[in-house]
Image (cartoon, rainbow, N blue to C red):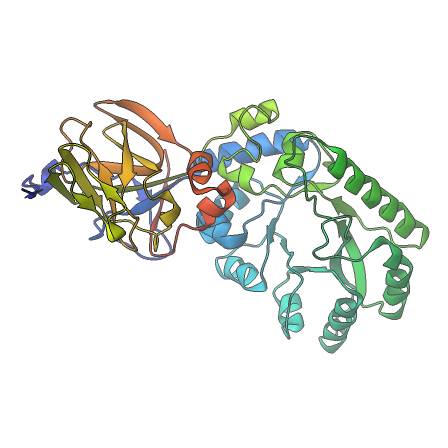
Length: 409
């Protein structure tokens, strides 16, 4: 017979919350649902120092697209700006506006190259646009002219060296130079490319892209186009010591995740510290006899008398349905397997082998936990491996209904 174990502990016996800064999506520290993400700002600053060491004399422009890889862009940007970041990169115009509205004054590079009819506002908000076709140069020139700009508008030009996504092809460089002569309202302040295979075991593709980029830079210089800044390195290239040039664009490394598989990274990869921890609590425990189904579709059946706990986090929060019957979480410092189908709002875990497990116990979905049964950690890379994906997707999938709490030491 199934039974439901209730929690009768008094509120004062509940584990205390860490000291936090208020998240921008107001969520009280005693929010009804215990599911939340903790962002450790000291780890963020530490990772910036690691990246700056790898960058040597190059400027460091952390990439804060996709809500700073799920960590909350305004709070992350404020922390990094105070810690000395030289500027920031985002994908979308809207992401750049969010940072400006949050009080960020550092340069912001908008990399996606899609501006719709917002060229004037891009300039008005002091953003630096990346252009990837000649028509965009004309559009920004007209916007600058309409604004009565007294000096040329700085843009960064993307060169397609092998990504086949966005950018001007090397054979178009003479036409680029001609277009710039036609529109003196625009000047090329930066030249960039994007490395497609920097996280690969071999360097052939990256070496070829950098060779093409160097040739393009030299060709443009002969045509009279001499940008002050050239940049290509993402996290993987930077940590391997490739092509810092004048600036670097670290993304996932800033958030403490190595862009390379374990054992393949540069020594600096091992110095990175995870920045985010996602946790929730047990809300119910059911004692089931052998052979009982668990969850939608009865995708799991108990093989023994089992204690099955429910946690209030599901795929709508970023706990992927692909973790059904394969993922783990931490309870009391020990791993508990996910059993049955991950639901939209809830997930079941098997706590049969976790002595003393009870409602209101902390559950860590990824991050570290120390408890009475030991200490363990589940990294975003491990979660990604179970899902058949990459850590980038895991981090950016943490939904906005999971409040972020920003923790200082």
